[in-house]
Image (cartoon, rainbow, N blue to C red; front, side, top):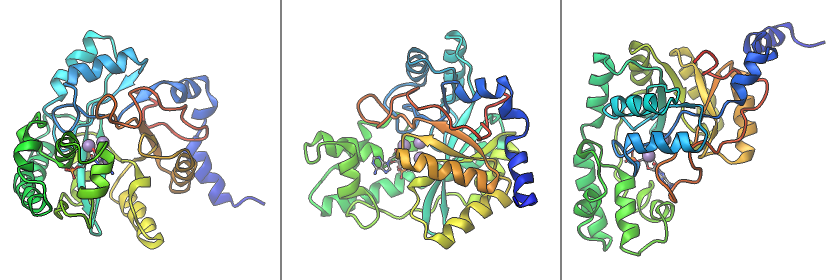
Length: 303
Ligand code: AMP
Ligand code: MN
Ligand code: MN
Ligand code: MN
């Protein structure tokens, strides 16, 4: 005998929605709602990201630069010119239980003073962190990394680890960006400088204040123990978080199933995106995700 509470939960999750033709169409759309431009740590300008999304067959697109809204007007205008349905977005850096977690905000109003002010505060400190990273990298035998990273920075407010990784790769020390992270830039490695980002509560509050929905980005990347894992998703839900990413360039195929189940278990809607940063650098190109699994509620179903 199935547990009636669970049945209710499942009914809430899928509603009539996913039985309808509209729901299937919505699930099958080529949706890419997570990627980056030169406004944060991507290599293409917002309009060039829009053009690449369109060329790759994306049918609904959001640019989600880290902690920054200034690419949105260009992204929106480029998408309109390409007849590409567009969703304004952002990816907010959060510190939760000592770990960095990313929260994507979708359908945000970029003129929201609360969101803009919160992100400005989140960005501040990147410059000092970058100089500390540079000093530590110099001590580890890589001098001039701050100046080197700057060559890859499109937005001086948004200097980050990816820019350092591109510079160190250019030096020929590592074959790709990912191995630079592993050798120099992740916790415990010589170039890592701990940093306090926004709180989870702040990020969700700013997104909601801007009329948006909050989404846990690439949940499979966080190294939570089982207790913290549950605590994190419960906290996110209690704060008014809506969705988690299931299909993302940061997940393995096995993780697609794990997080599809987690979405059902907690009653989260789902989002998806390539997390594209640049040609040849990201694991997935724009618009190349598989189909959203059945039985999930796409956060984009009405968009
Ligand atoms: P930051 O906000 O400066 O700490 O940089 C975070 C960014 O670094 C992420 O958004 C990714 O683009 C990139 N990143 C983090 N870890 C890795 C990794 N292991 N390999 C490649 N890129 C990574
Ligand atoms: Mn990034
Ligand atoms: Mn991220
Ligand atoms: Mn991202």
